[in-house]
Amino acid sequence: MDIYEEYIRTINDFPIPGIKFRDITPLLACGDAFHQVIMDLNKELPSYDNWDKIIAAESRGFIFAAPLCSMNNKGLVLARKAGKLPLVGYSESYDLEYGQNTIEIPKDAIQPGDRVIIMDDLIATGGSAKAMVHLVIKAGGIPIMGLFLVELRSLQGYKKLGIPVVSIVNYGLHSGDLLRLNNARHLMGKFKEKVDENDILVVYEDDSEEIINKNNIIAIVQIEKNGRQTYIKYRD
Image 1 (cartoon, helix red, strand yellow):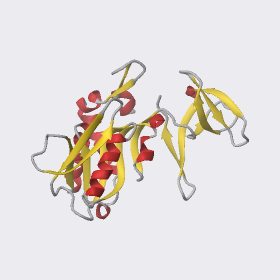
Image 2 (cartoon, one colour; image 1 turned 120 degrees about the vertical axis):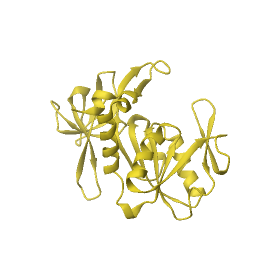
Image 3 (cartoon, rainbow, N blue to C red; image 1 turned 180 degrees about the vertical axis):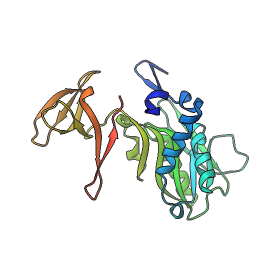
């Protein structure tokens, strides 16, 4: 059973029309599923000697970062909304769709040289995650990777961070994604653009193009530096 298909609920037109809201509360409410989430996230962490702390965003980032830090005997840094901390070490503001938000970390939470993982439940545009990267750097730490449960690929937030990013569940596509295809002219093609809610335009290595149904996407393909191909399950 795919627990992510089963327990992440998609709510259309929330909080505004046209948005697909990915609701993780059913995933958290099922003990077995929640346990599996933590195990899946834990597999993506660097080896024990290569990191020191996780910085997590208020508030859903806390849910996942706390058990990971406890399991690995590592420190947890809370990136809190402005006005929540009595002793503020560093503050960072970032843009929202309308206005700004500010997050802060406690005094002395990050020591110079600490190797820190950036964590939240979801990465979309990357604004809050980038702010956490800046907080780590201000404190003298070293941001080494981003770790997220959910990524909205079409928004390409990972590009803002300047560090490797790993996400357990990916929704949507962004321009240039390499796709493994079924019932198409070629086995591999790059996503070019969305045609409608059901179809996309792909371009092949020979520069030809084809409109295919989303149901014909087998996986998103990532090619590592050594040429190894990793498949990421496509979710709409």
